[in-house]
Image 1 (spheres, rainbow, N blue to C red):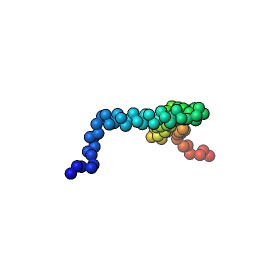
Image 2 (cartoon, helix red, strand yellow):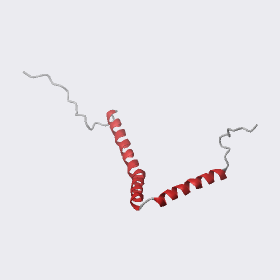
Image 3 (cartoon, one colour):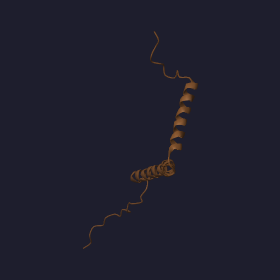
Image 4 (tube, rainbow, N blue to C red):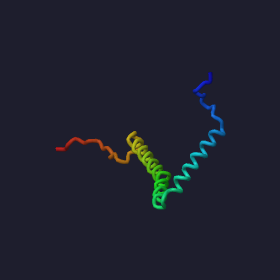
Length: 90
């Protein structure tokens, strides 16, 4: 009796390559069927996702780490210098 569940990693490279080429053809067919305005919108959206979004996430992480480091006591940017209290003079 033949096993109906194939072992992971048993797919050959040619099968993987053929499937990858099929996906590429489907993508090219979808792009060629798009009108110009939709193609422009997709290009702008892809550019946003590739460039601006990672930049925003990185800057957020940097400022979050700076805030965390400031609260750890290493910096005294927002702390006023403590002066010893003097008793009221009469």
